Length: 495
Image (cartoon, rainbow, N blue to C red; front, side, top):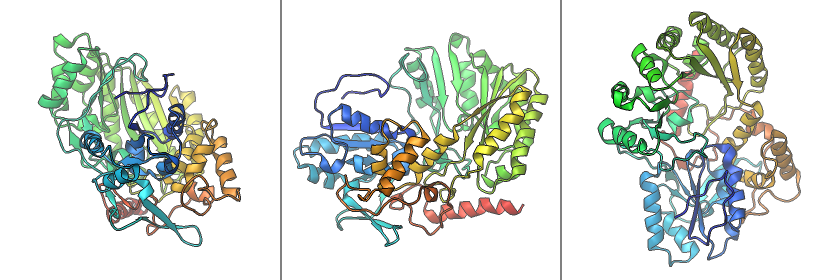
């Protein structure tokens, strides 16, 4: 087995039986095609020959909505990989002498394994998706995401100075999040909330990592909600760990206390990161962010009193039902925190709401006014000495195209290569494919209608009864529960 790094110039490996990629970020999708080309592998699954490797993929992007990438992949692994990936490899060993098509048919009957070529999307005469069905009754009608149920979670297997986070041993403290913010893929897609055992998981992982580096990163959507998180910090505060450098991902504001901040500072951590989503209490209710203004202020105060130098806050604009008054509330909240904690460097990270599959807000489109509202926040806060780091609105639009589209997008992904780093490149490729007289799936084995208008993908709020590109894939919660959660959130508009 060989591991390739996409940001390194590595020589082509010898012919292999399997070639896989994990996608954690929609915008990494075109990298798959570059890798295939470098390995002299056909981009389109239906054109691969008998002795070509089986191309498989996994990760949160492909588990949420694999359809835009489906024509490039022979096999897609849905869900947690701890059991699924070894099971897949073991089965491939057993059937390696089968024909390519027979191997795919065997794999299609394994829970959590999706074989796109054995499913056919059906469309109405108007081009609306009406179903994605198996090609025969031997293939399951739906595929269920697999869930790792052990209380031992993952940690780094490769530590290198060449990575995005150099020489850091990453340890997964929790998986999913119990708060269920209505837009959050990391929470809904990975349910249920699981914690890494302190004695059997976290401590052994720390000890293993410290044999390679003195830098530790504690990861999770809400690491401080681990019931023994403070026990872990107290253990790491012992004198024997004086030379380590500790960093942690986003924390839940209500869990922050002065002891936590003091231990983090003692272990080289200079900042705390809290996702507030919005300074508007109404908007926090809409997204199910169970967080009061007082709790946000207390977290900032504890960080300041504990000796931390920076407080990083994450907010979002363009959420469903958002109004101008909610933007003003965010500006006012940040200014209040600055006044409350003089000397604490404040940074506000801003992103635009992007609809994600398997969440209650998956039916909502992106808001065009989000771009203007980001600029409004920047204009008000930067002159006050607050650093504002906005995510590109253009990147948010590209994410939306990839997160909401179906199999018809694949030719666009193929065409945009070389200009995928710009929104203009995506728009041009999309319109050229849509406006051509050749069907969008000219490179694919089945005829599909032309792409919908780009505005329909980006901005429209879809009906709850609409068939979604991922409707044949079972997430942790059924659609009716997501609709219920959506309706619970949107009733906050009335309050």
